[in-house]
Image (cartoon, rainbow, N blue to C red; front, side, top):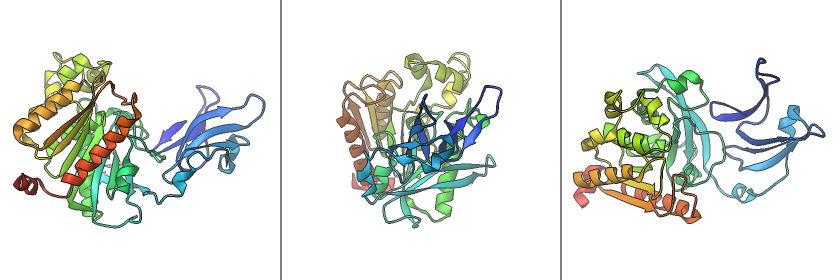
Length: 353
């Protein structure tokens, strides 16, 4: 499998010295490829913006587009009025490069204008939002779109699918540089008349939470934020994360070697600028992003008088997978926060408190 942009397709390589051979299939995401050792049959899982995941069987690798579904486990979704999605491209003028992402429209409002916006930031950072059918607690853009939000999932600098330079160029600026890509995308959506500039919200989980925490220190344009398991201070995160090589790599060394990088890319030193009501979630036993990061953010915003709510899931780690109800509760509470704060300005909210 190989990712190019928002699609994950099937490639073949005869040996490490040979070029990759692309096998033409459907747009979308291929996964779980399985071949037969008795004949040329090939099975795989496929999904796209409009097609839920099913298992398909093709006669051979050259007939992917003629494959037939051999399961119908997710047929229920095909009978619903689902959000329609498309790839959206814009230019980051500051960096002079084209960025792309995904727009998920509310059902019945495809390509309409002046919609309320949720910027939903993927984790990673070395990951991407893709052309696939995703409906879970972390990739819940379809749920938010079904509740009336235009969901914007940007593949900012550092995302996979756009070449190694695009991935590694964010080193040393692993929050500030992707944030500029994201904000330039929001600017373009406003300029194109697609979104209502007075109803902008932002959120993400894990590295998406890192970026959410950073973005609300850089602008007051977002009416509401939903931060999941995101760090605000990198020295303590380096000391508690289960793979400290991540902080070491993206920031260029240990805290005592490059203290200016650890401080310069940390939201905690700029939290006094925040004017965005923020909902925070964390797992009690998270060893990837220690819950203390969420505690610090909640305490700071409470101290500053910013509406804030912290939700801690007991007996959960970073994946929030021990109790399936916790994922449902997470999405439910985040949607409630967006509905409560996302449609009015901070000034209006503070007058009502």
